[in-house]
Length: 196
Image 1 (cartoon, rainbow, N blue to C red):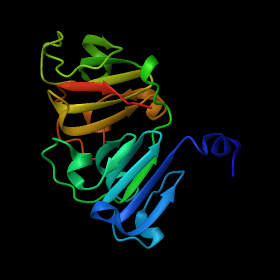
Image 2 (cartoon, one colour):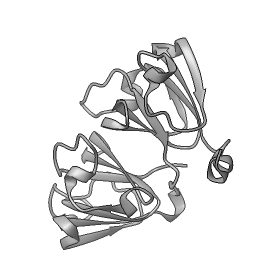
Image 3 (cartoon, rainbow, N blue to C red):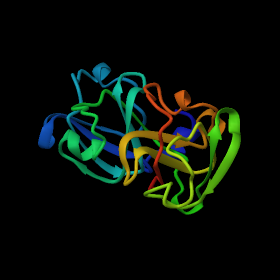
């Protein structure tokens, strides 16, 4: 085990169950899991995050739709998908979000790809970017300068979720397709810092 892994033990803990309402086979994790099927699970249908923020994925190897998982109970898929409108009844991979720092998060939104055009600097949560002065519904590129963020397709933290981290891709998301493996649109209308 590396020294980095030793340092993070205890900072991140998630318990997953194969069935809804914390039923069926269960397993605790302190580190990432690229495929729950490698642990003889068919799927994850309920989750308890005991420490650290995590991101869950629809498919193995951190692919598909992303769902932020902060400290708390997730007895059914609606609890992690929130108001996304995207029905994902199970997760197949997950990992901790290690750079989350709620008090020191900074990001810059850009209207064009490759950090071009009008920009908007963030250090707080925005339930509606348009109400706070961002002129359109699209964000073509994002630079995460510090911490970790979750961006949402619609105002009020609804729609597709995109977890954006300083320690992934050097914090540089040059085009919307880099937000996630399943980014369908560059429409981002709300964004918030990830809780740690």
